[in-house]
Length: 246
Ligand SMILES: [Zn+2]
Image (cartoon, rainbow, N blue to C red; front, top):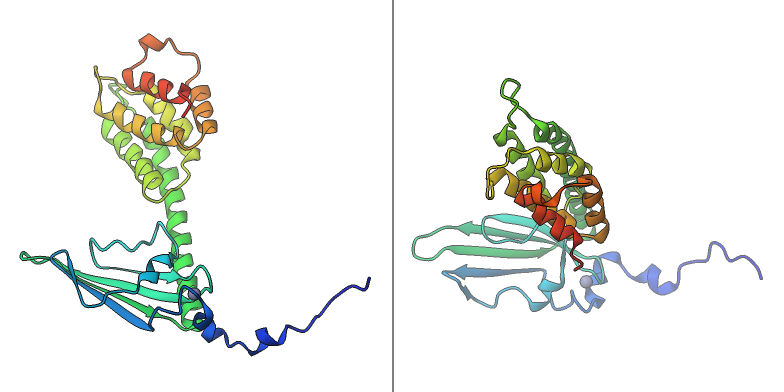
């Protein structure tokens, strides 16, 4: 059998102009070049956005989204043909019913590629910032007042909130902070029956544990051999969560 190389592209691919891909796409065909939706006091006016627009995928999610709780914009892409759209909303708070103006505009291939590139670059920068800030937060989890030897609650709380937020909202992997978070939970100055800083640390570790059985195992290993009844309630709760099979 001869090796097949440098096959010419089939005629159909040569002929199809990339800019017209949306015309033969089942998702994009019914979507006009520009559409908009106007909300006032929780009710829409006019025809609104085409139904298929909900099938478009947000580029850079969850760093970008199409939440309408404030003015917002994002790039959406068709999962079938790759055509991109600019989505934007202008939100105006009014006492007699807030107004929301949503626009969806199809982009040319050139505009779409450029916009996607910018979004992905911004996401890369945000992820890098998360890692840098996360590294800076780790020493805070181990902050003791030098004179009293007491854990500096505010620093520990701020650091655990940082990891809680990025794990929940931006789906970031906080694996690198887990040993420090477990150590902080074990070392925190517990105020019975349940204390605020203990709860903050527990919540972030619980969410991490619930992501995968391997995470539960890792936390149990880091906790080591403990006398269960002598540990603070937050540690007991975490152990129970990690032993439980979901
Ligand atoms: Zn499409």
